[in-house]
Image 1 (spheres, one colour):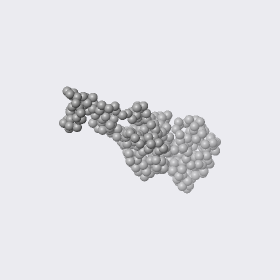
Image 2 (cartoon, rainbow, N blue to C red):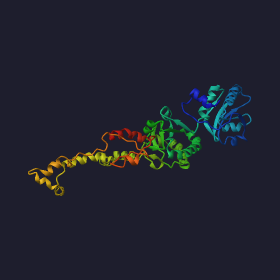
Image 3 (spheres, helix red, strand yellow):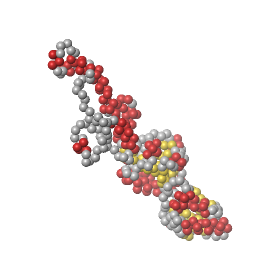
Image 4 (cartoon, rainbow, N blue to C red):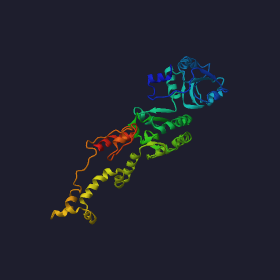
Length: 386
């Protein structure tokens, strides 16, 4: 039986966790073998004394856990024979169960003659917890709403995200021990499944890594999305937590377009909105400028140049105000040609593009169905077409 099934059944955490390296039997460890054996992987270690009655009572529950779980590594240390090693592990009573990840002891200990259920839950929460938690709309507030969380937002379809994934995983694995000691947690959100959550988290492109303190956005991780710079950023977080810098920092969302799949049009519109009415007009383009030009044509003064270019046959109509009549009516007397009388938005493909766009002006939207900005634009685009 795998612990993953047990965790799902008991709903211990409400988070999807991955499992570490395989094991399934308890190895006898001592001062000579401990460091080398536990240097890599995740280990659940029982510290005991053969003369301790609580240890003897705990033994069958320990054996049941060892036999049931084949996806963690177990070890046992006889503290009567390895007193100094047990002291190094902060063992003050027997039995004591502790977890080591890549040679680093985790802070939380399980002390005393505990039940099998308590032991299994301890292993699930301490040993089985991976470097990165899977977060979504259903559990983000519950978990990232308290403590310090560094969260990657991504799309499984995004090329930049796929390039980043192994670098992120390696950096998370190697920094996890130090981050865990400082209470800094790592998570990731699939934005295709959690679009609204990603929008609320200031995500404007993929991938985006944001830092949260007690559910409050603090900053974006503005480093190159590769192993070394990401690990360096992660390892600085414990010191920043300890100094109180993060708790006092005010959030200023920043766009880092060099690392992302992003939407130029949406970004330009955002900048225009921040810059005020004059720049907003430029960003909106012909849509806002068009009606204004019609008004100006109706009201514009008659210039000498335009008069010189007006048709002479109007002289035959004695006494008629030739130019004023045509100008006041908006100039062209002929009916305007309508290229889209039905307000239809036509889906173009490589098969029909050339034929359909061979005549008339076209405004064409290029988009990706998984892009949040594209999804946000879609109803506006349909409304404009109509």
